Length: 387
Image 1 (tube, rainbow, N blue to C red):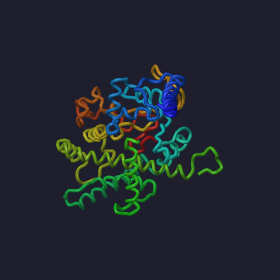
Image 2: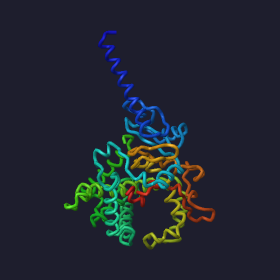
Image 3: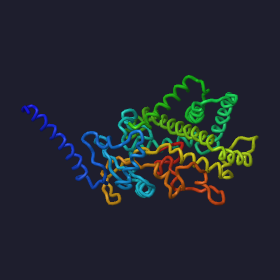
């Protein structure tokens, strides 16, 4: 081999050695990290994951390394949590240490830590406080919001009637309805389903949701204030994304499940006829008298597993967790699928069955494992995901 070839080989060997040494020493010096597969230089553990079914890959790694293990996405250190007990220990028992939002490079390039879903620290606290206060002023949790939902539900029914019973794809109008509820809250105005601006908004929301779920995946004199135009815009976008796509997808999959399980559909109709009848609009107060419907809604959200990986979190300081030390800034993925499909809590969890949320007397049964949108202190309701 010529001298240039020897030099190139030596340099390549040095780069590989230094990369491995850097990754190893980073974990050694910063704390005792959970076990995990050995990462490759520069790309980490990407090649060891099935990106078409990353949830299954995570479950396989759990079988080998246990309910907590370390992965590297590129050079980014990530700790994965698998199962209800360890999620509760991290996100509830030590929840204050896991409040930061983990960094997703593709999203960070766009949002730049703005808004309420992907922000952290003092910015998140200020924007969250402002968002909840403003939403309450707009009627969140009050009669006025319920009336807007009821109005939009009637519009949705009218759109279905226009099909005259012909085969139709309901995806679009099922997305329009929850989006219009958010519009009525933020803009005090709903839109016709064929309005050009509304259609553009719907298209952008759909594209953003698909990207997020892909494997690659006001106070000028206060310098400490986070109330600027960019944060306001991003927070409004967060509310649309959280309230529109999650709700419309849940309704769409719920409709498909009703078509597949006509016996469930028949029981729902029987309860509706008994409690509500055919001459008035449903109200939130009816929920207490409709345990089967309540169970079906919960089972739909459990079964469809809309956010299997959850949104990433990060520890805001060096912490001792079980027998490990997680350095400040470590990204944490608290997986939701293993909790929603826990056979110890939900018998035959891979089957759609509303009985998962009913007791032997037919009364609604709550479950701590019902975590379709996480169990963390950031989360307050399915509509305002991760506020």
